[in-house]
Image (cartoon, rainbow, N blue to C red; front, side):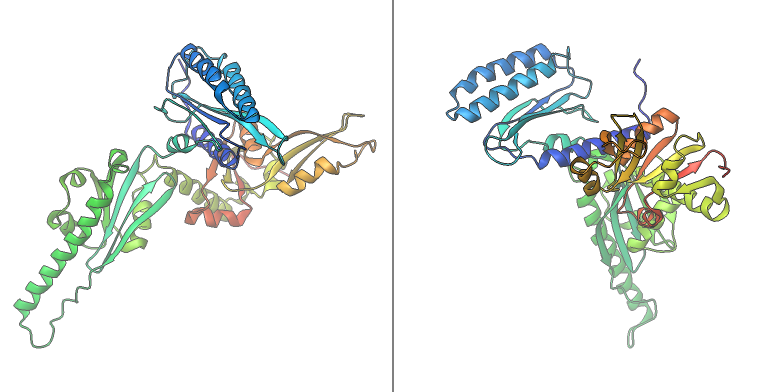
Length: 422
């Protein structure tokens, strides 16, 4: 029985695929010689290989000698890799392969990327082009579930979606409704009747936008629930009186009192609906950042922050959870002296890590020229050490409010199991 993937592992896997896609999208071929291959879940690999052999034969018709050679070489490399599988994994398999120019014509280097998607990729596709087709793989990175948010009072409203760690504001509206005091020359009864009509029109206007946004084909199938918030009783009146589609009404899972409405009210809904939204990435991230800030102010010996502090204590056994900004751009480098075996670890900017290849440092022990024994992104390094030492690694989204606050502490922090004594 396969081990159930933990939330942190899933997020890291999605992050790695996302970074790989960013790299793949930058690759360009000289002609239509870059292969994108999508294999549906559980498909027999022998069938796929037979199909590729037919494509290999068809490639003989390509007029350009260079393109023909590159396509045939890429097909051969893909077939060799697929022989390791009896059938495609449960989510399918995606392969990108082709000759990528390093500088100019004649400098092409054959590259291959094999990806197991985080969600089933129900696409059967073989395509040769001057770029890799990543769009179907990118689709599998979309969050499966979203929550609809409505924040409303009599003056303003906002609607949005909580998708993973991101709040997407879909619309902001004002009512233009006058206060309850009577306008000059109008009877109280007439004024109140006009005001009620204006409120009803405002409700229906907001409901129209809610229906349009939440019932979209790319939203409604993933809509896990709708939460309505706002000060006072307006939100309840909106639910009862507005022309909301019955499918939206059936999705309402909570009605929450907030101090604010509009866009600020959307964020307040998230704070007050943590129990309902506990499975969403936004809430998990915010809870951990809040825990870090609370410990920092009240139990500062139970946290570490800053890259150097966390890395220095990576083997202490005291670390329970590492928080790291998703956009942190640092490289872990392990240098080794080929003469005496001395090793040195460094965390560097990508540009400084690249310079080591051209200007390797001297060994601190014997003075010989050191070589790069290992290099990887800081997040991958922390994830590997987490697996080795038994701590969790949680990625923090930079665009969120809690992400912007957390970034001020160096982008890396650790919650400890017990205090460290220096």
